[in-house]
Amino acid sequence: MEPFFFGDPGRRLFGAYHPPAHDARDTGVLICPPVGQEAIRSHRALLKLAEQLAQAGFPSLRFDYSGCGDSQGDLDAVSWDQWRHDTIGAGRELIGGTGASSIVLCGVRLGASLACAAAAELKAAAVVLWDPVISGAAYLEQLHAQHQEWLRGSFARNAAHLGADEILGFSWPPTLAEQVSAVDLQLHAAPAPRVLVLHASRTGNRGRSLAESWGATFVSHDAAPVWTKEKGADEFGGGMVAPAVAQSVVDWISGSS
Image (cartoon, rainbow, N blue to C red; front, top):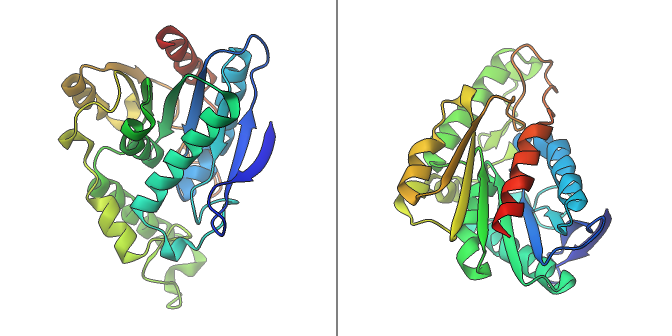
């Protein structure tokens, strides 16, 4: 892994490049992470995905959006358009740095929604949506519910100083929340010629109808969602790794490249 910074001066993004272990392929894979707690919990799984891609010969890039992780920027000032711009910039960085002739976007949760938003401008050959956020409004409702559940069992449940725009330890300013609420993948055409929709069966297979409307490949998996914590885990539980799911992603990309 090769960590580095890239992007616009004054708003540098953090990236982690994973070179192919051998016999480099001509397709680069951009890994688009979730945000907030889901990004923390899925970090290790996406690291393992990048390592599996490297073993299959694919150069890949993981990165942090503006205001997230190790990238510059104030989370209170970011927007959906900025994150889309970040995703496009990361894709161009991967193509320019590797000389790849094509790119595949692989996004998890809100990262999957951003992958869809950036795919056309990057002329993506394929897109992988891993437990995607299909409806931004439903996603935020779910986050608010999780936040209230956490408060009920937390020492902070009576803390009046907690910001009204905070959800699970991360700022969600009203403008950003409004923009994310407007996301609805069902209203758009397929983002790329080939699309894979992966959905954990325990979350209801909500991606099936999306895949059917796009003529995409749909795979339901039984692995624990990498972006959340298992019931009964401690507060900082989660961080599951689903190597079989990641391998199915690698195999599908291999077949589409």
